Length: 227
Image (cartoon, rainbow, N blue to C red; front, side):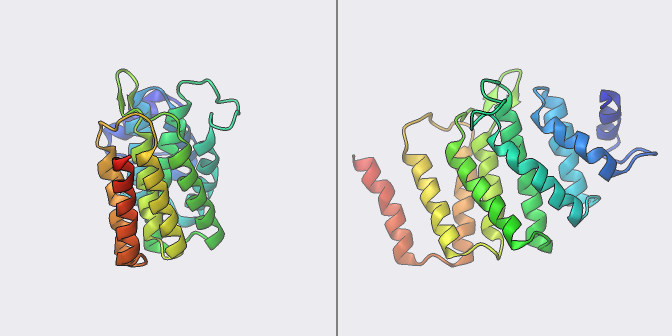
């Protein structure tokens, strides 16, 4: 879609231009989530989407459900031997799809428009993505923020808050976080750990995990550090 149109939308504080509707512009907006251009990806793709979904609420529940269905497969682009394999920008599509799904999950906590099966697919997709993402970079010159781990954490944070997730789900989230943090790999240097901690905070806020189980989970890190 015309870059000048998107620039005008950003310049007008995300106001939908005359002759257009948010629903009409939405597919093009989602496409920009994978753009290698930081302006189109961050300021337009995510920034405008977040404004329309969270602040202005120009995107209704039915449209949000379709957005979730559209974005969920993009968490796997390049990870399963598909046509994104080998594309250095595929991680942007994955990462920013997770971030966009996070704001949908946030809206659903407030309004509960997703069906139980849809929440389940989102949860399974988000949990798998956290563990399976192979690119753990934060800030990359010229490309901008990749931040896949942080974005996956944001998605799981709101899914943990969802009343349709339960104790078993929360246990799986804690186990996934421990697996991620104790495996060999790059050291997080762009505040990813802060976003991961917020997931734990929300698990604790649900009060589904008892003190003894939490202590056992924490002790698992101590055993890893002692190896």
